Length: 298
Image (spheres, rainbow, N blue to C red):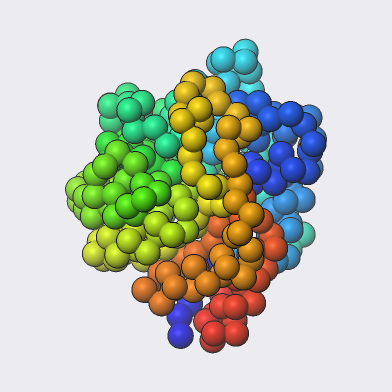
């Protein structure tokens, strides 16, 4: 049996569901202004469900996103607000890790907007410097190309904390990133920058088995946290999309999701959880199934 780090589930979709607000390109960020405390409550629900990690609501806090809405003056304050809500939830729960999330620049799932490492790394370093004193790990997530991974991994070193690097894989061939590059090609990044764990996220759970096979070859702790979307639609791959362009699937019950996650654990994964459309009920059932199987959630 294994020791498992149980991640939380998705934040953005939970915020949309609970706030009742119309989604915008800044939906998860804007909520912290319009509904203070809601992010904290979601973190709390994931901890109560059995998660051992709170992932900060900082995924989309980038200058390029905020500038479109004349909110860039709030860049630093929004990061601190997200950190505070994660800490408040952990304080109430009494234990748990905090992972500082850094998502893709410009847009998700879009390898064609990858910025050169020399341009991207300083932008990530700025965020990592803010997050570093307040988190246990830096989580670079939903990276869609090897160069995107490299820029994030290089910048993340500024935090002075362990770095977890997570890629988004092709929904039909999980052995490849969305760029078409092989998951195993991450070895090139790992040779240049210290990374403590490698993961795959925000792709359909059916693709994660192939992703695990590629990640396992890299010799680091690895894992997965899949989404609950039917697919990533073409309209979402345009500038400034909203989650209205994405369709959640109705068949991904907590029971079915747990079966997927347990199969990743059987392959050697030691870090599992959920991404968009995977909520507290999924994490609760997964925690129960892990315990029933004899695994220990850290």
